[in-house]
Length: 177
Image (cartoon, rainbow, N blue to C red):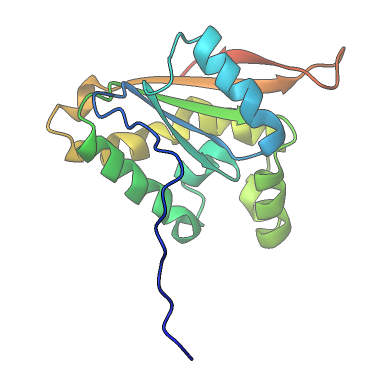
C-alpha cells in the first residue's frame, strides 16, 4: 500500500483575526435545533459580537460541570475550560445556559437511572444546576488565569420552549447563589 500524502492546493484563503480577545465563555447544549436561537440570543440580548465569546457546547449544557458522580464522562469540559482561561486572560464572564426537553439530561437518566435526579424532576434539577452547581467548577478551572479567578462574573439562563409557537424559544435569567 502506498503511503498517503496530502495535496495542498489552496482554492480560497480565509482570513484569521488574531486581534480577537474573547470576554465571555458560554456553556450550553449542542442540540442543533437550538444553536441558532442561542447565537441570536448572545448577539441581540447579551450584546456579544462574534469573537467576543467562546462556545463550549456539549450534550446537557452545564450538566457536565455539576457534581453528580459522573464527572469522568465530562472531565474534558473542565480541561477545555482551563485551556480557554489560560489562553485568553480577557475572559471576564462565564454564561451557563440550559433548555427544556434536553436530550443530554434524558440520556444520562436512561444510562444511570433515577439516582441522577436525586429525587427531583428534570426541570428542578436543571434549575439547581443553573443556580448553584456549575459555578464552583468553572471558578476552579479559571484559577489558571493570570487574573484573579474571583473577578469572574457568572450569569445563567434557561431556554424555554414557547407554548404559543413550537418553533420558538425564549430565555429567562436564573439567579445564581
